[in-house]
Image (cartoon, rainbow, N blue to C red; front, side):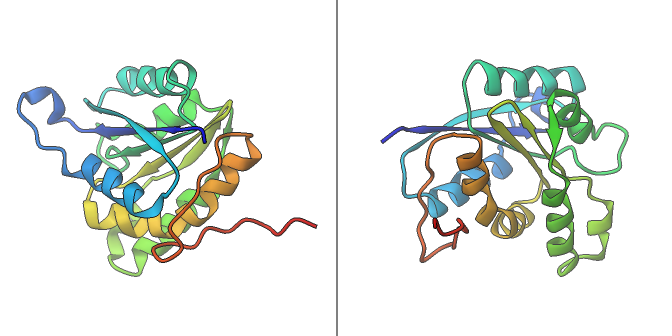
Length: 177
């Protein structure tokens, strides 16, 4: 069985300030460990809120590291320094707006400020890139909403087959005729 490479990128203006505990990136890793039963390897980085750094990291993870999925956290708000969606759009061939729409709809069940979020997703060649919010609780809520479609999306891009723990999350794949 192929080991899937999954990029995890934490975007934070505190990343370049020295010692920084990344609870958001760790929340993504913990969630994916809960979801996935197939082997996977994290390609993990904490980077500053700088568009050129974000773009270069996404390109390297997709093109050189060959990650089938890259999940980012942070940089999706309305602040001037929040440029993760712009960086994602710049490196993607096609955008997948349904991911952002569903994440905002899910987050609105918990906080009215979810409308300020600019999460998005897109495809770069054979890689799905998904932008998540920065708070660990919101990360899990958003991944619970969109992850059921992620393995099938990766199937359609001819990526590695991601198997999931059905007692934790149900993944949708259409039945074969």
